[in-house]
Length: 150
Image (cartoon, rainbow, N blue to C red; front, side, top):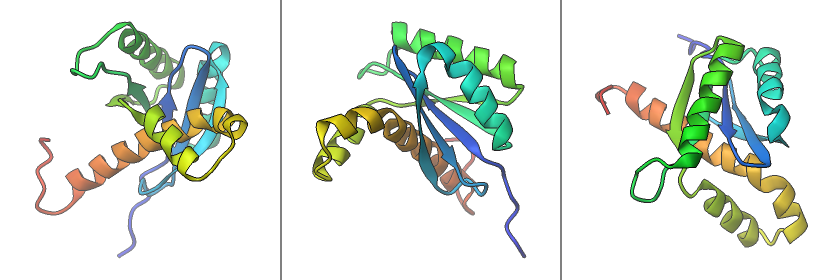
């Protein structure tokens, strides 16, 4: 029996100046960076990307403090998620994205990427890392024998 197509998921890593984007495959197994956009036009670009990719869902990174509490950045991410939900009529989930930018930076440094290239790619890679974590969690919950109440 063939696997059902679940639909693509758009990953969003919000920032003050730029918003990183990532997209999953239609089976929601893997993700890839989809670049970054200016924060001022991000909602419009994400809505257009979601429509062109026939996305089923959007995941917005929730920048929690290291102790798990929410600060001003988390409040802004929640507001942005609400805006995307209203603009796209898609379900929008929030997902912990602590340290994804640090992880992305370390990966690019280990790949010996120049500072200039890292600056251009970090937002998309951080979004990809956050989205992949979300996809992995969904796959774990769907696996036989695993509880859906994680």
